[in-house]
Length: 249
Image (cartoon, rainbow, N blue to C red):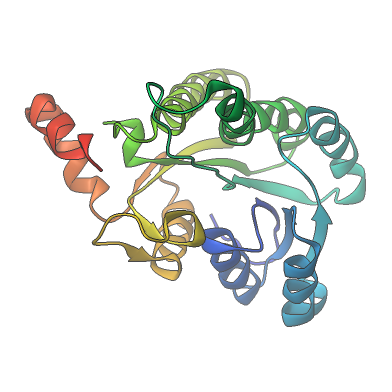
């Protein structure tokens, strides 16, 4: 798929992997519609890329705002042909020790951003994408969808759910909209604000974004980035070992 000249939505497009996706896609000649919660970051993004980027403030944990955005986007950007659901949120939670009154709102937000918003945007935008001569819906998941870590059970569950949703949606599109590709991009641990102070062996956001873009360009249905290629094979051969390795993240 040639990405030059396309209009591409990137959620979480002003920070981390999303910022790199925006930068690299704009550099390849695409027009990027970047959404996020931080107006200052979005303004900086627009200043860097000029008319190659349109920005919108959107809280993906607000279902009414997500629905309104999805309903309005095709009219605002009728050439939209690629959607990259990149935004994510992760909290470290100990269900046995943490105060449930404090954690419940955080966990609800985590599920909303990582799964609910993706489903709502897909429902709202797929009819438009299905009408394009060629289009793609790309959902960013994680190696933790294959094997979870104990400290982030809700994030892992949401990403596993998103991976299953993506596959089932692909089945529907293969029958009903064959020109629409539904893609699962599986990331390893990436060096972003979300992972600061966590884990080791991280890859850069730039490297992760490049791999995702190359996978889309090559029409891959599943894009395994970095160490998730090894994890994929390991989960086939010895899932017990894979779970043991990822358990402590």
